[in-house]
Length: 209
Image 1: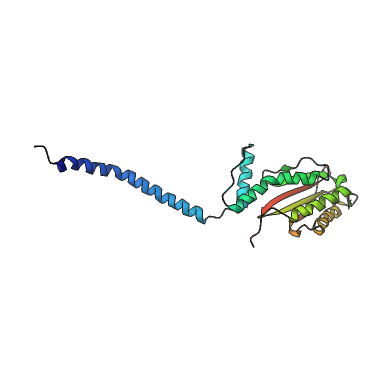
Image 2: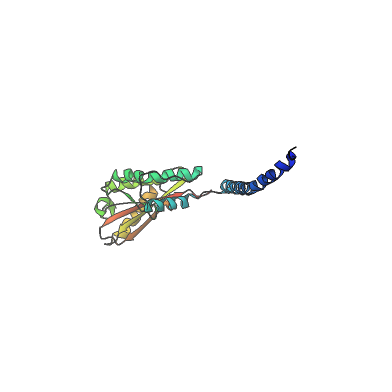
């Protein structure tokens, strides 16, 4: 007669269970880590401003025409989409009234820069007709930002004569009088040998209520 089945199968069964223990421990650890990251993702709140800075930095380091994936979160996604469309919107805004070079993005700040000759923007200390039309459109632009965002502009007038400060003040007053939020407008005077008025448009996350 052969050996009892328990004596034959016993050692192999015990050995199989012992061999499975490391795999079981690894799977358990994996499931714990997976649960941890799911909980972490569910309680996290993406910050749009940081996301945009990271995306701008990656774009500057690795130029590409391929779209860069946006962070999760509906508000952040809306912000990123608005940020992508900003150069085109600023280009159409500025080029409609003034002779300008194509607006360009500053990769370090994400701002859209545009400039126009002083002579196109002003007649002495007064705004030219194209300058007035541009500021009127800009005020409307600043007053109606995309959902979940706010817009801001910095205007820098070249320093070179006694009219520089007055021109800067006139830009600010015109924008605000035409409906732009006061906290969205910043003006100043700078040394600029090219004698150009420079505008920097920025998109920011909407303030929490």
